[in-house]
Length: 504
Ligand code: MFK
Ligand code: FAD
Image (cartoon, rainbow, N blue to C red; front, top):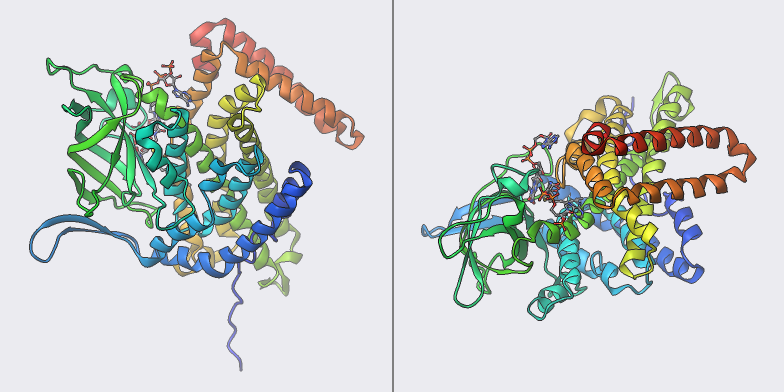
């Protein structure tokens, strides 16, 4: 008698399987742009399925390791990564996963195109999506500074399509005393040197993708009397190369690689800066405000990862229902199970549309087409979308594991990687509470204008929806909720800062 073996779920071409992504692009992009972008995404989707996904799995199975000494006792602090991880860097350059956003071939639509591509790539990327997020963020900071002469070469490399030229960047903000409260927690000092550069001294407690070529980091400038200014006003932003042309570390010691719940593919280290040579790239004391440009980008990337992981889990679960039988019929024919899938689908569609809205607004801003209202919406929604997608990803992916029964708990299915890695989306790039406070910061700094923008955008969308009679009951529900929210925020605003804290 033939032994039963369950047919496994498979991923398929993630572009062709994602009707909502295709519909979104078709209904938003100009026809000619859609035709080009769609055919590239179809090609790329096939590459994700046939080449990239198995390399991503290899990254998980061959995590990076740290070699402190060479055979002859020399301190080398070499991070050894697998071939698949290195291939991811090449793919990223070839596919223009950062470049596309800066070349702006399709004007404001280039961001949406890049986001769609990253969305297909992220769950198969072996978390190479992390260095890409930071690389994109650093390119953004440099662009916001007007690409100064000294940074022209690095900008060109971060946005290059040539694997031989392409560089990735790290983002070293967190120290032992504080990852949220960077302003008070940063102890690293920058000693001015005669040639106008600085030497950095301190310990960075979390540095992901430490095999990157360059990094941005924060430090306090040491005054001639040996004093430093405390608080966030004492922080400046620095650019540094991690290694010199011979591969020798820039007066940096890698203390250890972190032993993590997830993101194991990613080399995350503790670094001791023992005189690392660096360039100051912000005005003195403007480090946090300058790196905020990076935070906007990396937080959007975080949302891309979160939503893409949810989408991947659902693709797999939907494939599985056509293959797995229970109680004499396929899972797809059990209404209770399909209801579970439908709920996951609804949650994922909702956050997908939020993500695309972020991309649309960012694209407009980067091509100077954004209205003041668009700019307010981008500022307000960035922390909201980051925090909400992070939380939803954990919930939906956990539900997704259950869709596979016991197999969802098995390491060699690869499904567990998605669950482990999703846990980080709520922590890095600002925890949920820190982002809630950032929402309040955006309201306070704009004198409430971001909320006005939100309410008038929502109102305009509702008016469009009112034109469709079948939507009327739900439009009315949303209208009532919006009215309550408007009253609530007005009341909180009247109560000043304390009211703002309460509304958090
Ligand atoms: C798929 C993978 C995707 C992602 C990969 C990521 C890998 C890397 C992982 C990391 O985690 S990197 C580290 C990330 N760290 C954080 O996100 C830090 C979390 N903490 C915060 O965000 C705090 O809110 C913050 C450090 C910004 C608080 O600092 P301060 O100095 O106490 O805030 P303050 O004084 O309110 O703001 C200083 C200036 O920055 C102000 O400008 P002005 O001086 O001009 O008034 C603020 O308006 C500005 N600012 C702060 N947050 C901003 C911002 N501007 C725009 N957007 C923001 N979000
Ligand atoms: P804390 O700031 O100590 O927070 C602890 C808790 O207190 C959280 O729940 C937080 O929400 C809450 N809290 C803090 N302040 C407030 C407040 N005012 N109100 C309400 N609640 C509050 N950092 C980098 O700079 N570069 C990296 O490359 C990087 N990579 C990372 C990779 C991984 C896998 C992980 C897990 C972290 C990484 N980080 C990196 C660090 C990450 O950004 C921080 O861990 C994160 O910002 C939180 O900081 P913290 O760990 O100091 O937590």
